[in-house]
Length: 148
Image (cartoon, rainbow, N blue to C red; front, side, top):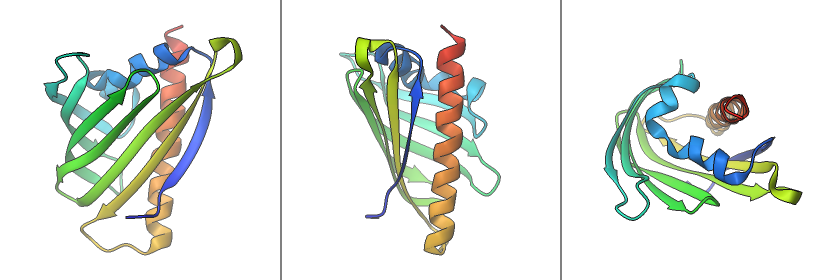
């Protein structure tokens, strides 16, 4: 799973506001098109943020129930990996946040690598990852900026 797809977007909000939206997994069904249900199974005792969650995904071509493990690095980054899924063999993702000059904006980079149980051509896999990333970044930007 060495190949990763990545894209970035600038959001008109400070990094802590962006990370607050990212970390609120239970609210994902309100603003993402693909996540239909999000259940936090475990939280980190120190931060109160999710460390394990189950997401029910319906993204057209990809319908899955995924248990994910999360690791947060303050308001700078979050990484997640697949614990188990119905359609996926492996998944690794990350949001990396870089504050803009003055801290009023944040560049968010989303990195994703997916390995499905059903073989896909490399081109199809890359396109699926790109669609997931583009939708997620657009939804995140809209959500964060609408809360400002």
